[in-house]
Length: 441
Image (cartoon, rainbow, N blue to C red):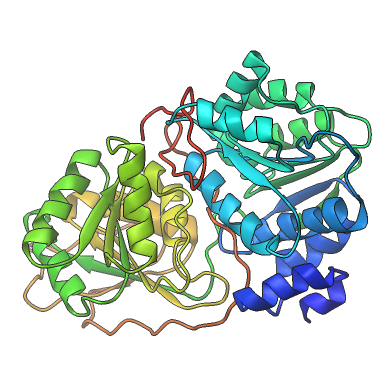
């Protein structure tokens, strides 16, 4: 199966080929024909399944290939609503790449930076608007954005927006949009009742596509636990990272202060490291993510919320320095690796007081996680892993699996977790803004 069979225009196929993409993922194969037919769509898909291309490619085809825009001032014809700034910026990058050979103008609207550049961009005219709910409401209240011409609405990571408390803002935006002849595409990791209620209220006989079950993880990710005393975690992390100092690694910590301490420690030992969390300025977060993507730094230490939108091709390794307090967050974290068919390794450094959290994760995944001691870092007492969820005794250490370099268009950010109800730190590529999406992660 290739993209040639999906009815996409030569200009879009050319852009895909230049990105190195030739085969659609399952969600793209299922969703693109339905969107091209003009159907409303409920799509269930986890991160890494290719959901961004699943809505972007047919959106470009319908609005900018099959149907010419009306004359007069350019105004937004498509709105992509997303929970966080970083995810909005990542989607913007993908839109720009896929529309490379089309005359399409896109911009992002999110908080955390000044509004005036966004207002200036809107005045110049845009075709596709990628926005977070709070900042879009700010523009609607100031009447600096015109959404009366929206023909396609995409709600990306709808369950995540609900988790963050954006339901009132989502409804305000939906009520401000034209209903007649509007196509609505809702992407979510789950189809919980609030999602279904939103669909019943604002969608017309939507088709349904379900690619990944809730809290599922891709089969290409290998899970590994290294038991260690809490006082020796930093030394074990350094040992693992030093095995290949060129390998890009995303490290998850539980707190902003802890992330900063880890960066300082790793820097002192010669590893190129940066942190991304809500106490960092917008420019610092943007720079850290860009440096990680282009290889200037090899280790990025992140908190859960601030990691939204991190999308790295063939990211081989994710390390949980601290286990998440909520088991579902583990699925989100390891969704950063093993994307689009590539193989990845998820390593967790687990101290005795985190045994309960590990049991919860194994129970959620319904699978064993290999438990392997690292020579010289054996814990003073073994982990107590009584209860459901499988398990095993510590084994000898093994080598990480090498990444697979399969290339498919992929999505940015994962869903299915249950974070605290505040917005995430995000980046923006061209335009700057600020406001109620600027709450810290």
